Image 1 (tube, one colour):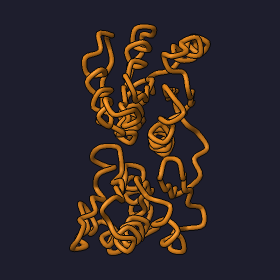
Image 2 (cartoon, one colour):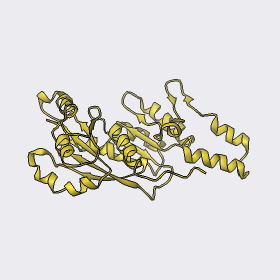
Image 3 (cartoon, one colour):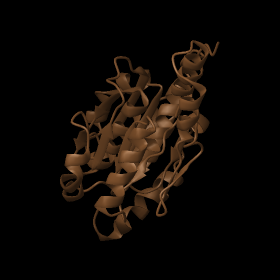
Length: 257
């Protein structure tokens, strides 16, 4: 249930296209639906602008499939993250045919309808090719929420001329997501070159002294570039959500009447 769905439901009651009883059946699932092993927050999109998202690690295939089924019945768009291909293959028959599985991002998207318009501009840049899976998770997230996303891969500081070739594009974005492992230096470099918000995403890519992303995380947290914010290690989803919300600030207010 989101603002558009609730507004339509109220409008249908007003125009007598549905009955109060039928509307009540839909509203009964607010604010959450108790499955025993999970309490699905159907109210989240209405409250915070981003729907409940399924984090699949640690969940059985049966649990993931049931949550998807219940969210679809409630009229939600589906984003399932950290969904390994093996689990996806085991639940594939229960997923609608228009569902889209991104193997790199390990993410499943099921839209209510094909989105014809995307807003604003987000650029997602990676330091290396090995950082792409985390960047894809950010891109899938922001795209589902309705942002226009452009991806620029493998522009790390070891060959900074590759980044400088794209600097004009970075400066035109409303928000830039920088995904980097190893020394995590790309976020500071980008932050020092543009006047846009930079969301730094450390990845667990790197040799032993990278400590599975801790080195990149600390480097990004200690960035001397102004306007750089850092999310958790490998948290492409969090970066995609934050970038989308920043992107929304550039849009005119919706008419709620």
